[in-house]
Image (cartoon, one colour):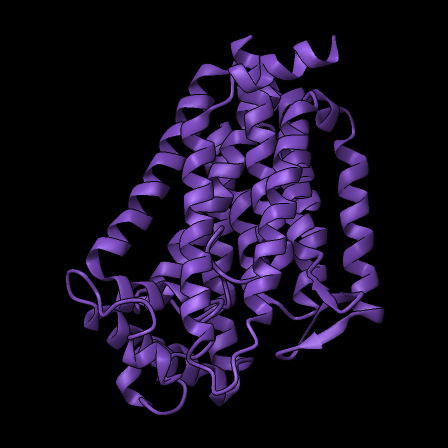
Length: 367
């Protein structure tokens, strides 16, 4: 009976979605290997870790896909509370990396609880909105969703991790917008943000914070300081040409001109070493993922399922847009990694688990 149920799930699997995610992971591993061989004494530790993280993530993807997604809907509140507890705990006993107290160190491996918080927020909002789909335009529902998103948002701000906090905010804002929340509430939020920014610019922001914003609009103001990251990344992206310089032969990446090349700016490494062809494949795989997600949203008949897939689509789109935007100088450097591609254990594993949850929904909607 169990074997039959599992075989039915695999039969109804969205293999295009799965394959696109796996191929992106392979691109990330190839880029990470190339970056590693540029070191004077390469030990391939991060590469080996990423391979292990990939295998764990793929196993969890399959395991989660075999579990009925409605289980997550029923336990949405507990998943949310668990994530909030982790975010509170990390503020007290977490490890500080790059000025952010947002990591747990488990047996020598760093784990970032905000990645669980992203999953938990999507599950919680999908569960909450699906039970109130006819009352989603009410002010009470708007406030309740704001409180649900606001708690993890503030806890992440306290770390401080402004990039992840921005993602949590955008997940909430875009999901309630697409769910049909009254537009006047959303316009009010946008107006409040603009007002707070203007007030902060004149009365709160320090000079160095203003410089960061100005440097974003014109990196040449400080090309060897705050504009260095964007400048080097854009040089690498433009240097790749059509076919790239080959894995291990990119001057920007191999000579370590690109900062955070394994995480934030791994897209620039791919662009330089694999060229337009490599970048085109990365974009193609992401187009496949988003096409399959949108198709699933339109096909499933369960409100929770459709809202959850919509939330996952928003999460991935935000991170892809911001990361690639950073690499080509379109958005500020916010420390957002590229899903499935950038180095990071908790980030990769949660991304694959999200695909597994979507696969669980798709398989059961087809059966």
